[in-house]
Image (tube, rainbow, N blue to C red; front, side, top):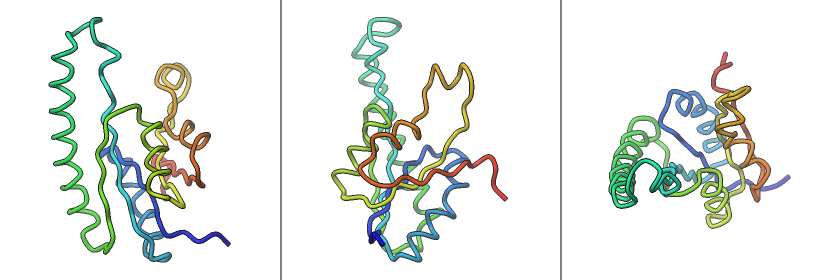
Length: 150
């Protein structure tokens, strides 16, 4: 059996992340693993010159990163303060790509993440971060549908 010592938990600070948390906690506690919690601020530069000048987007991204760092600290304090080994990361970039890069950089053994259950046109337009991570991750990925919890 593969040894799982490092677990990555991508969050978006929605109720979906909170519903995935019991699974993350279970694995972290049972396996005595280190937990890495990541939030990725999606780059807005792809919208530059279409709607807003590039400099305004840079300022907005900086504000979003600062806000995300505060939300991350509050999220960990509220839901994970009793876990002994938690590292937090806030990055900027394409969400799935940054999750996969972090898994590689941090020698992650398991990614536990939620799905949003998008269907139809919404999935075509927005894609599925979980699906992209599953296809590209260097380790197993456990997905939890937060909308169908018992």
